[in-house]
Image (spheres, rainbow, N blue to C red):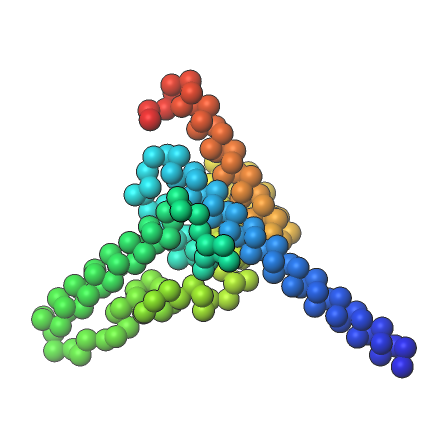
Length: 184
């Protein structure tokens, strides 16, 4: 009977640790997006689409919502509208030059869902893992940076390293702007 109680306690502790890890990962994921958004706005280029493909990994808004100055969700929505318009035009062109029946699969090209924001349906853990890897193709300066991130033992470690790298790049650009090396 004691062994059963001990096993139940261990199981409850493991579940609690898993919930804590989910909360930590969600917080880190939001922090990465806030850092990336700040970085892009500092470049005075909010119209830039940002690192290619990352916009589809933007999570649902945090409980308190995105800050008013946050632009990445607007950029993502704009890109999705552009993609949908392009897909509609492509489908129209195909249907006018072909006897094929238009397919509904054309809508939402490049996204999991054809309608609305699919990111809420995408498993958070998988989205966070992808972000922790994809982010580095945009922020690594050389292969050592990338290799260090790839060797990080966990998603949370890669996200932490990503936040630190974004801050480092922002500081370097700030120093360059201050010394006049970079055109504003």
